[in-house]
Amino acid sequence: MAVLPIVEVPDPRLRLISKPVEQVTDQTRAFVQDMIDTMYAANGIGLAAIQVGVDRRILVIDLQDEKDEDDKPIKAPHAYINPEILSVSEDLSSYNEGCLSIPEQYADVARPASCRVRWLDEHGEGHEEELTGLLSTCMQHEIDHLNGVLFIDHISRLKRDMVMKKLAKLRR
Ligand code: NI
Image 1 (cartoon, helix red, strand yellow):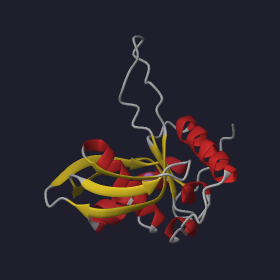
Image 2: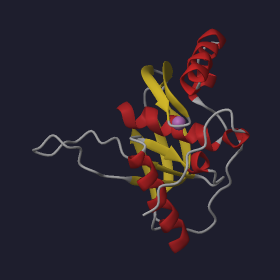
Image 3: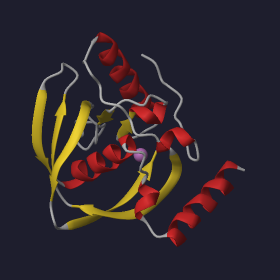
């Protein structure tokens, strides 16, 4: 178990295009576990490798939307290696997004409501699924990270400036 430091804006690494994973190995799996530990420690629902400074096409997501009898979220982390969006729906849905690399800032972002995605899991097995709801939104947000894109790139300049101002204030 290792909780890794999270890269925050305006770190230029967040603008890198991450490279594909050529082979899923024990080393990949150990890194995926560290990413999952880091995501939980930061109370996030998704994390891209570049957010811990590694420019590889790896994501972890756990929406933590299922609760046990004591109302504690049931942990069900998933790893997505070399994820690719194959198609997106025409209809959009808007969600109040946040990002561990832009701490405590949120903005409504409109994205395709559903998307078809292909990826490898942590055992190197291929999957393809149509994603909807929050998982669709989260997946598109995380794949954006692999392409150097942040959620604030999807909002107006005015709103982006507001987010960055609030963040500067928070850091003071
Ligand atoms: Ni993010």
